[in-house]
Every structure is written in structure tokens, then in C-alpha cells.
Image (tube, rainbow, N blue to C red; front, top):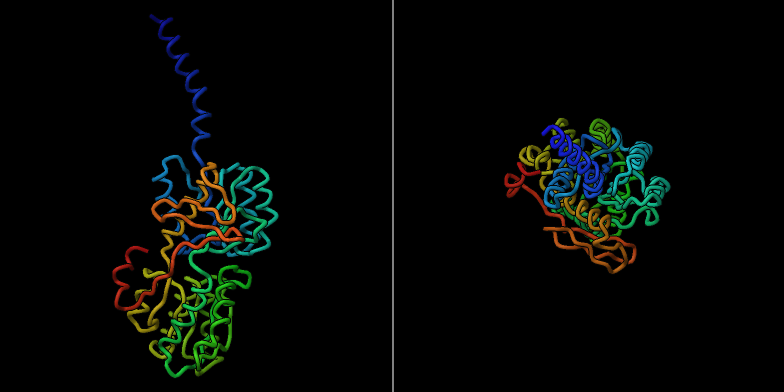
Length: 331
């Protein structure tokens, strides 16, 4: 009886040894690398990534990023992920060019690399997922200001960092169409580095430097909240409209106070979900990143890539006092 028991135990151990590596290989580890930890937009995106992982069933999400919005911090994080031999890296980049050598190293090791939200240069990734059409976003952020300034006026831009790919692209697109809004005068662009305290200080500086300022456009979820708070603290809610891109959960109070009349954003949960689905389908060979190619994104449908291997997820949605209560508890 004892011999039989020992044989059974030995067989079980042998089976475990033989099957464990195969099972480990079946689970795909996808790293969601964000600009910096502690930012609500990216925390919401991580929820979407986890939703995709649960739906796929064989995915582990590694949510990570530096403590500050620097390329150097992201390079350190990515090198660590390469050492861990993750299956895929999906990065929202702090710099379009600086990350390229490290990401090329990741791809040379067989790691799938995509960028999302804020892109890297084409040679540093297999594809890029824009949250929406860049020209559409550029037009929308200035239109949100112009809609409440029928007689025109001075407006300023409070952006993230000087190297943020997505914000820089949106501002370029905005400048292309600002002539379509007569009387709107863009007086300055300043940078808060996606830090609440610096963005707040920059917003205060704009109000001091431009006493006739009518609106602050912040195409960053950190900057828009900081600017709205600065306007409220200065007693100028209702006089200076803060608009741009923000989260309903963080902007609801500022809409109620009158510091922001309206703003826009796409659903960051959907963005994190879509980036994860794309990374998974590329890492498993179920799709290929090539011009004209289509990559499945689960419940979000599919994305078709352009000649630069870029695709867009969905149009942004405008939030104001009429609808924000329906979304403020979601993201």
C-alpha cells in the first residue's frame, strides 16, 4: 500500500513538473506602461486592461510606470520589463524618440511593442493606437473654448510636457484650424509637466500675465483640473472658462462651480481595454500590424491601420452640466 502511495505521489509530482512550464507559457504577460503612476486617467485605463484580461482568460496585466513624467523613468521601467521577459509592452510615451532604442531592444527579444494614447516613432513600435482622430481632437479643444466666446477673446493653452507626443500633436492640429474661429486669439502655450502643483502655478501665471484672458484650454486630465482649481481660487469661475480634456469624476465639481462650462474626453477604460486586446492579438499571432490591416479589439470592434501603422479608437464625447452626473461615478 505504501509503495503504491509513493508511486502515485511520484506520478503526480512528475505530471506537475511536466505541465507547469506549458501552463506558464500559455499565460501572456502584458505590461501597460503609463506616463506616470497616480494619474486618474491611467488608473481608469488599467481597469479596462484588467477587464480585457478577464475576458481573454489567459492574460496577466502588469500596470507600471515611473513616478514622474520623464522618458528616463520610462526607459528604466521598460528595461526591467525586458529583463522579466514579458510578452507585450503597451506604452503611453513621455517622448516620441527617446524610448525608441529601448523599445527596439524589446522587439529584438521577441516582445510585442505597441504605443497607445501618446505614441512613439514608428521604428520603436509595431503599431500606435490613437484615442481618437488627431485633427478631430485639435479642432474640438479650440471649439470648446470658442463656443462660449461668441465675440472672441484671448485664450491660452496649458499642456503637459514639451515632449508629450499626443498633446503636441493636438496643439499642432488646433493651430491649423484656429483661423476658423474669428476673434479667438491664442496668446500663450505653457507646460505643467502633468504635475498638479506645477500646472496650478502655470495657470495662475497665465491669469496674471493676461488680465483679459477668457479661457484656458488644457488637453491633459491633470492640467484641466489644476487650471479649474486655480480659476476658482482666484474668484474667476464664470469669467475664465477652463476646457480641454478631462475626466467626469474629476471635473464634476468644477462644472458645478462654473469654472468649466464643458470639456471632452474619450473613455479611458475603453482605451486601456482596446490597447490590451491589440497587444494580445499581436503577441499571439492572431493579427498582424501592417498598413491596411485590421486588428480585433473585443467589444470595441476592430481598428484599421493607416500607412504609418496607426489607428484611432473612437470620437471624444463632450461633457457639461446637462450630462456629467451620468458619468462622474464611472470614470
